[in-house]
Structures are given as structure tokens and as C-alpha cells.
View (cartoon, rainbow, N blue to C red):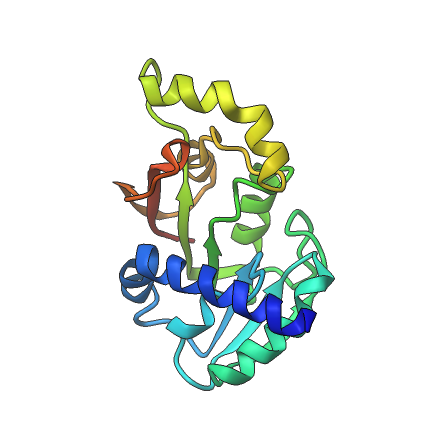
Amino acid sequence: MIHIINDWFISLVDRYMDAHYGGRKQSLLRDHPETIVEIGAAYGANFRYLKPGTKVIVIEPNESYNKILKRRAERFNVTIEIHNTGAESIDLPSDSIDMVLDSLVMCTVEYPDQVLSEIHRILRTGGKFVFIEHVRSEHHTWLCRLQNFVQKPWKWFFDGCHVNRDTASSIDKVPFSKIDLEEFKSKTVFLPIIPHISGTAIK
């Protein structure tokens, strides 16, 4: 019974996420390689956008997602290799990966700069980092003030999410050879997470 309820809830969340981000994710992942690394895959929301037969090396510290990850991998015809470790120390060789995917993860990791450094380390020269994140609003705006005001309760309620994290600046500090970043506003009733960024960074 719990299994059925969990799948039903995840199905609802999955449809919501696809409606908000699906088109953008399809565009960003259009030419992905045969093997990718996904940071914080959770329940496998991005498997639907991958070509059948893709291998996904999942970096997901929460072991409770393992069963649903395997079920969804089978559903979308991808193979997975699960590493139940934090992204601050990725147990993969340097210069070994062609693409790393990060989708709404940097807000929750404890040390985002360290995670980004690890992503850069494991990418081959010319490899691509693909990202979608909600971010801090511009300084001195009402939305920035709102984000700062709700930060503590938001972090507690949404499992460690930092609603006012400046991920764009963190990405810019990493020595990528090229960064293509787009700012956009999500159409959501959750005002603090309206500001978003998406794009790619090449090593």
C-alpha cells in the first residue's frame, strides 16, 4: 500500500515538474552522450528526457530513492549505476565524463562550490555541464527581501533548500572555458523560487 501511495505522489510531482521544465530540459539534453552523470537524481525525474539505452551514473546520497530510481529507469529504458554518496566528493576519476546534469540540486547541497569543483574535475576537456536551478533574486528587490525573510523556515520545510543561494555566481567562479546561462522566471505560485537560471558550461 505504501508503495502504491508513493508512486501516486511521485507521479503527481512528476507531471507538475514536466509541465514547468519539460521543454527546457528537452532542449538542454537534445544531444546528450551515451553516458551521463546526474547529481541528485532523487526519483529520476529527468530519465524521461534521455534517449533509450542511455547509461546514467546517479550521484544520490539518499538511499531511500534507490528502488524508485530502478523502477523508473526500467520504465524509460535507461540503465543506471547508483552511487549513494554526496556530490561534494564524487567517486569517479578525473577527466572521465562527457556530460554532468544538475537539476534543482545546488540549493540543497551543503557546499555548492565544492560540488561545482567536483563536476569540473570529472568532466573531460570539452565536456558539458547542464544545469537548471532556482536562484536568488537581484539585490534590493522586494523578491530578494522576501527570500531572505523566509530563508530559515523554507530551509526547514523544504529539506535543506536555500531559497536565496546565488548559484549563478558560483558557476561563474569555476574555470569553465565557456558558459551559456539564461535567466528566466518560473510560472509558479511559490514566489520565492520564481527566479531561475538554466544553461550549459563547457570545460
